[in-house]
Length: 180
Ligand code: S3P
Image (cartoon, rainbow, N blue to C red):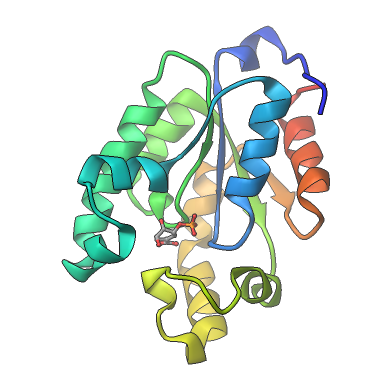
């Protein structure tokens, strides 16, 4: 992938991807980062580093334990002086301070895909604690989308259809960001 120039304004801002589990934030984010010649950071990875524990281990102590570390992770990455591409865990936008930190430091793109696509992409092997009940994945995702849509909508500068191949979706994200 060749390197794409961005406007002076966008060159100082993070490119932030939000959206449900399975929308491809990490895959698409890594491709955007390559294109923009920037580091890619996934807040879930920062959580694991900060906590010294896996996401399932944190959830075992209660979802609040995961969210506490996620809050710290979002604050750290948002404050980075170096412009990044940031993929956020699907629930990061539920916290108002996280929303403010992301909107204040970045251009936020909401990746959207219907539940059947999410279920197919997540596959059988996922270790996401919120989807531990494998018999009810579609229903859980459906419920979470309904609950979270207002938060995604309030955080996003742009929405992108995430149903295509990763390179296609990355191109749409980069176009929304004003790159190229
Ligand atoms: C979560 C999404 C996960 C991870 C955690 C909780 C959520 O990240 O942060 O399991 O609340 O939607 P991905 O969106 O990268 O799967």
